[in-house]
Structures are given as C-alpha cells and as structure tokens.
Length: 182
Image 1 (cartoon, rainbow, N blue to C red):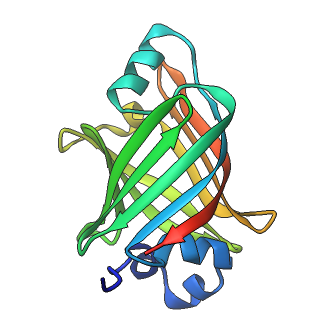
Image 2 (cartoon, one colour; image 1 turned 180 degrees about the vertical axis):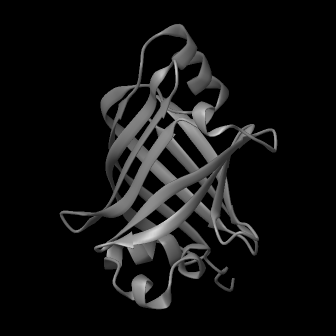
C-alpha cells in the first residue's frame, strides 16, 4: 500500500519541518497508518456541565497515569486520529483548509489551528472555533493550548482546553512511542 500524504509537512515551512525533533516528524508524517502507545495524565473540571461536554465531544475523563493507544490513518485529504484512553475514547478528523490551517473536527466542533515551529516542537495556535459549521465569537471559544514535542526521546503532547463559564474542559499530557507503521 503506498504511503498517504501527511498533512503536517505541508502546513510548516520546509526549513521549520527539518528542525523538528525526529520523533515529532515520524508521528506526523510517516506511513499511511501509525499505531502508538504510551501514557497520559488527564485533568478537567468535575462539575456536571464539564462532564456532559466531555461526553458530547468524546473527550477522555480525568485520571492520572492512563494508558493511551493512538491510531492515525492517513487518507488523501484527511487524517483520522483515534485515541483510546483508559477512561474514554477520543476520535477526530484532521484536514487542511483553503486558509492553510489545520482543521480538527471533534463531533459538532471544528478547531482551526495555525501551526508553528517552536524549537524542535510544533505549537498549535487556535485561530477559530466553529460549531456545526458556524463560527463562534472569540469570547465564547475559550482557549486551547497544544504542543507536540519530545520528552526523554519520545513523542510528547501537552493539550489544555478551557471554556468560559466552564473552566478546564480537558487537559491531557503525556508521551507516545510508535509501535507499528504501515
């Protein structure tokens, strides 16, 4: 099976791409299918509204030291990321838009990121959020801090999503190692 074209190299300048840590480049560009496993610490508010939103968006529930398994399937126009945490499953579809941004769809919500190299890592900067295709006003979209880097030679991630009136919806950080590439 020929390797599908990965999205991430096309969203960063080639000089920036070459300066990323090898573990980051592998996770975001190698093969048509990647399977990886690792560990994550997940945090989030415990009140009812936060729990309901996590359920609606298929986000993991809080818990430290959770096993995580990731499968990335690369297709011609998009990538499907399936993350299985000990306390939940999170699936999203990533694609590029005409605006040279990465669009990540989680259920009815689409997050629009611009990607930038920060040292040997990728900094995902949230530019816009849409709900059922309609853009949310800046005051309603909250903040999402996201970074793909390396720690102890392994691919590392650090995500923190906060919403007005809700607080920390979900934050998860940890590491992954690639188990299989097809």
